[in-house]
Image 1: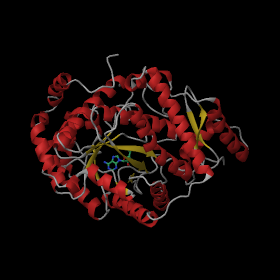
Image 2: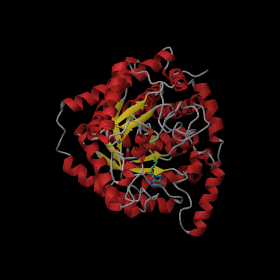
Image 3: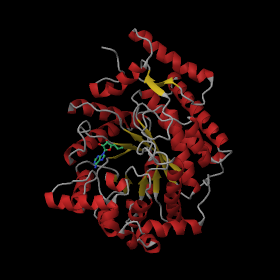
Image 4: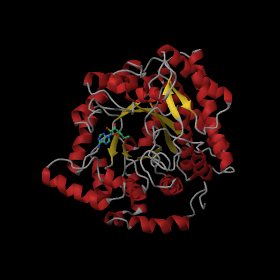
Length: 483
Ligand SMILES: CCC[C@H]1O[C@@H](n2cnc3c(N)ncnc32)[C@H](O)[C@@H]1O
């Protein structure tokens, strides 16, 4: 395995770069030095990492939607609406599925069809096809910083074009945009693709240009135990900082039990700093992002606003730097701009009402934090052992061994042996541990709480609980109680 967690050799990087920039015609418009100068012409107010650092210092939780449509003018109109009517603190550009699969010819067809029929025929903005100048038009006509949000295993060309185009933040990672998004792409390959992306960001940073990087925290977004998503987030953070990334936002997808979610948001930056320092890194700034519930949503819009509000409340009480906002159309698909803006305003109302409040440290909260710290350390330590100290090699081997195992992931590189289920308070526990490297007393903690739920419900813990939990929120509950 010629994989290693070390800065990519410049010769290798530039060899790859020639290949990457030739993957689509718009690659020829990328000129790194010119792009650096363009970034330096942007006001600080448009620099994502700068605003995040300010928010972290003030203890503010910012709100950011997802949004993307096929054509440039309509996408700009959408983002301006979310900025004005939605009061978005940060803006996205959600990229379409063809681009995510490097299928630029089909993205082009989608653009042509959208022009013909007068509405978006793509589920996002095809930034590679639109190119550098089009990206810059977006950045120049928006007030707040803009981030590229997608789900791309090989995101090298998309990074080259959007970063040259003035975007100052880029989501994703070699694990988090593989395991939940691909079936057949090896983890070794996607870690290498994302080492390229992070090296490119490192090159911008070395020129004094801040580009924020945000691994995709929620993974499959369905009952992912905090220690599993934290393990992946910390690993991607280490891989990014190793290539020169400095502005790092680590994420977590809401599970639904308040104490567990607050504990998750509070422990994530601590674990990241602990392992980054342990591995000898010091030049980084960590912020956090909390994703409102990523699983099935109620169709009823009033209930959907309830789920959105609960996610906003957990983000505020956990003091996350940023919360990613859902809309009341979540159960149906891509929201209208009005619904997207409404989800934002609901979130902002909760954030404003809770910004001067905090959750007291209680025994239960401390226990949740302790469990997440111990479990995540167990995963990370075993991963480092498997890699004989190299976190990249260790990650590939950890997935092979099921030491890192993400529930409900499509990737054939994921063992898929663990089974999560909620306990009676709705916290996500583990029913089947697969090969997670947890010692007995951690396993006992999970078994006990699931057994208590079984007693409350008069049924033995089983896979049925998992199924009931997957549908619960869509049916207006949190815990999937039997009929
Ligand atoms: C992590 C991806 C799933 C979430 O991402 C939203 N999503 C996807 N594509 C778009 C888009 N083009 N505009 C607004 N939201 C979008 C989905 O609704 C879901 O919540």
